[in-house]
Length: 117
Length: 333
Length: 158
Image (cartoon, rainbow over all chains, first blue to last red; front, side, top):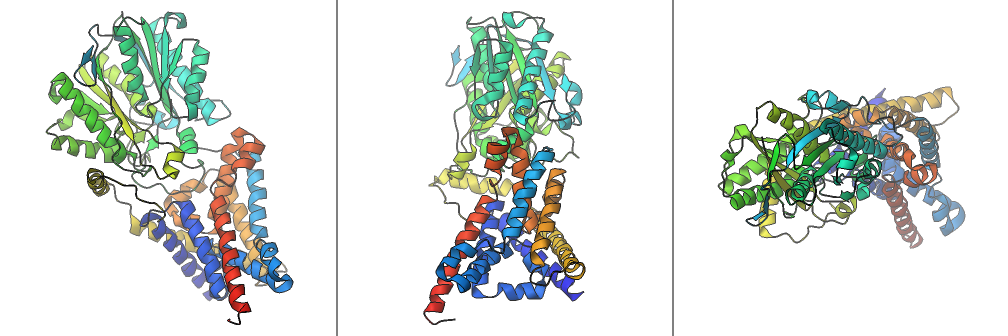
C-alpha cells in the first residue's frame, strides 16, 4: 500500500518538474523530454536512480527519466561482462522491450487507425 | 491608381459579383454557420489525406462562387489563390481542376486580401474582365505541417490559435451588381522580434498597425469613415495589442466598429484558445458573413485587414523570429 | 533554455516585453496540479500493473519493469489511435508527456499521421519525428556518463 502512495507522489512530482520546464522555462516537449532523459543517465551514473526505483517503484520507473537511467545501466552491465565494447553493445539491453513495443505497436496502429484531427 | 505610399484606389470600383464560404464540422457548430454555403461533417471530405481534403474545400468554394455568379469557368480570365500548405499545393491543384490561367500567391493568412487586392487591380486596369480570388486552410493539415501530428499530446498554451478548416472565394468583375472594392493598401513585412509560433497574434499585430496607419495616411481619411474595420486573425491577444498600438499612433478606432474575423467564427464554448487563424479565417468571414450583412444593408463600408505570419517550420528551428504582413482592402456597398 | 536571443533593436525588445505583458497568462499552478495528479495516477496504475505481473505471472521485482512499461505503451498507443490521448494530454500537460506514455504517444501519433504518405517514407520515415531527440540524447548521455564512470573506476575511484 505504501508503495502505491510513493509511486503516486514521486511520479507526480517528476511530472511537475516537467510541467515547470514547459511552462516557466518555455521549453518544447521534445526539449523537456530530452533534458529529462539526459538527467536520468546522469542520476544513474551518480548511483541515486536505482535506489529511487527501489523506494518509489513505478513512480520512478515509469517517467521518461528512467529511460536515461536504463540506457546507462545497460551500458555498465555489458561493460562489466565484456569490457569497454560492452558500453556500445549494452546500451539498449534493458530498454529494448520498451522501444520495440513502441515501434511494433505504433506501426500496427498506423495500419488500423486514421488520425482524428 | 496609386495614392500615397502603398495604396491603390480603384476608380472603376470592381464588383464582387459572387462570393462563397465553405467550412468544416467545427465551423458548422460555430457562431456564423448560417453564412456558409457548404458545411462538411468531417475534416476528410471523403479524401484520404488532409492535404487532399483542403484541395476539395478550395475547389468547392471556387465552384460555388462561379455557380452563384451565373458565369462559366471560361468567362474567368485569371485565378488567384493561396493557402498554407507547402508550395501552395491545394491552390495549384484547384487551378488544375478549374482550368483557368493561374497565379499562385502566398501571404500566409493574409492571402485572401492579397488575392482580392490583386484581382481588383487587374479588373480596374482593364487587364481582365472577371478574376476569381480564393484562399483556404485546413486545421489538421496546418497542424501536421507547422506544429505536431494531430494526435500528439502536446499541451497548447492559451495564446495558441485554432486554424480554420474552410475556404472562401470571391469573383471580381467589371460589370454586375454587388459590393464594390474601392481601394487596397499593400503591406510591408514587419518583424518585431517575436519568435513564439504559439503566439502569432502578438507577432502579427505590428504589421496590422503599420498597414492600417499607412491606409489612413495615404487616403487622408479617419477610422469613422468605415462602418466596420476587421483584422483577419489576430485573436484576442493580437486584437488587444493592435488597439493599444493604434492609440499610441493617435488613431482611435471606435470599439463598436473594430473587430477581428478570428473572434467571430466560433462560439465561446468551442475550445479555440485565443481565436481562429488560417487563410480561411479572413476569407470565410469576409466572403460569407460580412458580404451577407452588406447585402442586407447592415454594413455600407468596411475595411478588412488580413494578417499573415510568414514563418516556416524550419525558420523557427533556425531560431529566426516571425516576420509578418497585413494587406487591407476596402469594400463598399 | 536553448534559444539564443537574436540581436534585437531597442524597439523590438520593448515590444517583446509589452507583448508578453498582454499575453493570456498560462495557468502554471493549475497545470502543475493537473500534471501531478495525472502523472501520479499513471505511475500508480503502472505500480498496480507491475504487482500484477509479479504476483500472477512469473516476474520478479527486477524483471517486472519491462512488461509493465510495454503494457503502458500499448495502452497509450491504443488511446492515441482512438483519438482521445491528445484530449487527455491537453488537460494533463506533463502528466501524460513525462511518463513513458508520452514517448509511446509521440511515436504512434507520428506514425498514424503520416500514413497518408505511404508506409515506408510516411510511417517508417516519420515515426521518430518527435521521439528521435529523446533516443538520441538518452543514448548519447548514457554513453558519456558510462565513459566518465569507467574512467573514474579505472583510476581507482568509486
